[in-house]
Length: 411
Ligand code: MLT
Image (tube, rainbow, N blue to C red; front, side):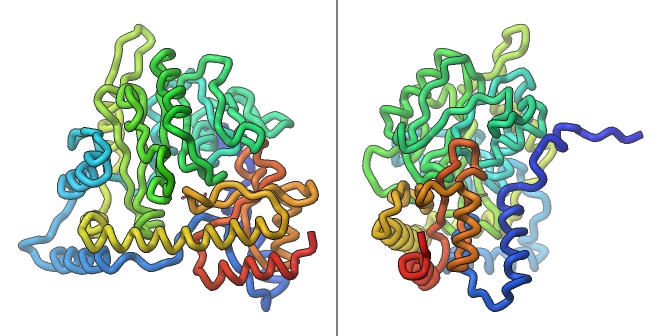
């Protein structure tokens, strides 16, 4: 008899964004003429930058010629891309990394979900609340969560509420935790953390031999000074942090899939007998067993992000979406609704008006003005009473959405 991993049946019926898609499809089936504007899932809409496309075309031609054809590449990624990552994303910030500390992968979603595999089940997990659901769900699947309480919290996870009351800055937990998921600029709140605040987490991790799993997928959106782009800007972080970065949001790779994860050799985990083990070795072992690398064509595309044209083109992509963020932020503010984020991130987090719960506001927005957003409660109990809009639609749709909210939404 085939027994299942029963942790899977503890999970809510569907992943947040699948649930939203289901509700939108049901509405569309009943209202086929509705002109729906999607500001829900954080998926980019602008095409890949020309430098990326041209590099991919060349790579396709190489694959057509037996002299330049390539089969399996290194599971960790090609050196031509890793060298550029280190040179452009880390060296200018005074961070030195070795080639074998960067692992190219097919997405920060998969890496943040998979990374927990190299840790024991007894680890205590801390997440911010609200949180990107992947961190929680992957730990539920692994069996670290306990059960889901009536308060919407998993009994064995430690939640660090991030609300307007604490300016969306997670406070150090009172209990000892082993693995800490942090995401800055934050998904879903669009808010950031200062170097001083982040240093507290690095110090906590050092004091407690904990590990910080730092998701920096939105770092390209940072506009203000004193906002760290990488956790390794904080002294000591290379001993306690793993960092996830992505080409999805800065270069439009959501459908193309390319990201990378930095695992410095200094980061250590421990066996039950207290022996220190490099996480880098474990992650390398995991990746070489379960992953065969990102396709050559895609990595050549990612490499082009680091050319002069590539850098200019991704900057204008980010500027484009940040213009949308400003339109949303200012437009929503003008209706009297309280707004957060959207300054260093492509997400705008708002307080649902008149005390509505997040899912009621989702329905209202969809039904009254045909706009899709994401209910804050979908990201965790402290997201209740909040709502997320993304800046990733076209400028025209963004303007239209804000116009509808201002003129047609009855609060
Ligand atoms: C989101 O909307 O939160 C995004 O889809 C996150 C992701 O990149 O998976």
